[in-house]
Length: 115
Length: 111
Image 1 (tube, one colour):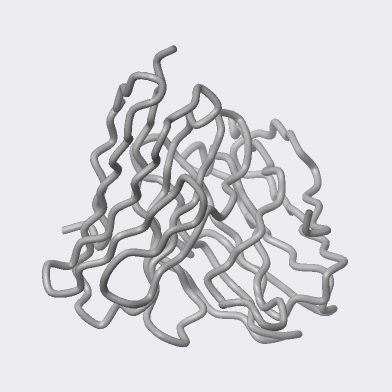
Image 2: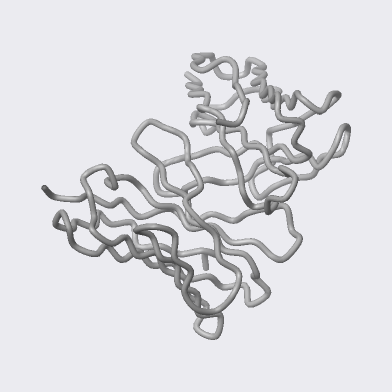
């Protein structure tokens, strides 16, 4: 299994508070992604990174920011959480040598509830 | 129009039968196609991928791609109860590091 961990795994917070989710990998993969998964919408890309300090937006990036200061860590920040950001967040990595970029390895997910 | 479409199901298939999961996509520039399986409460995991028109087989799984019809499917032969899961279709352009996922089809194998 790919060495990828997410923290926290569960979080309940209140509207307007900042939240940071962390994704840590031990695989030295180049690409890291943050997705959210909601019923009826499937997996939607929030932001991704193609290298240290190199990030780009996905299809649902409003209200989210990311940072990648080290190869192994990719942080997702909700500056001011809203109830619409209640979701399950998945981190994924790819870029294993010899593999296709689309071969993603997912973390276990972080369930965020915004009250 | 959603870029990647799947029937949400649920799709119920008797044990031992063939399960057929379908996916259509809108971007004709799409080059790479992936099938992920997600058990309830778990994270997605890659089953297989396909790039070329035709069939690709891996054990009990066969992926089929028809770029002219913008259609990709996954066949599961000799379905087992352990195949009960949601199957996600994902698409990307060649060299593009971003995948677009469908909403998934929930498959239930009936013993």
